Image (cartoon, rainbow, N blue to C red; front, side, top):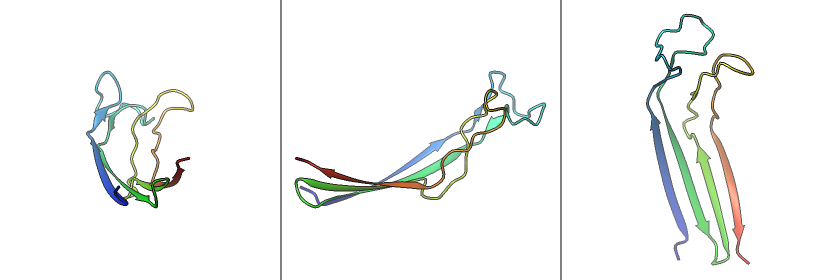
Length: 97
């Protein structure tokens, strides 16, 4: 079995319209309509097998700490933009019994 693996994932999302009318320049400055800018994200993953029973995984999402948003809601808690997560990571230890 392989002891060490690495993977990288790059995802790109093109700019999109936030409303059905495809409004580019919003008439008000509420932030609820207009273009949602394009963004790209890089994630890194590593896995280490210590034995056939023990496996550890490390995940790092949004490696470059890109600031972006994915929608322009018009409802609760109010109009505007919702920022997405910055850089974050996790560690998982798996033990097969």
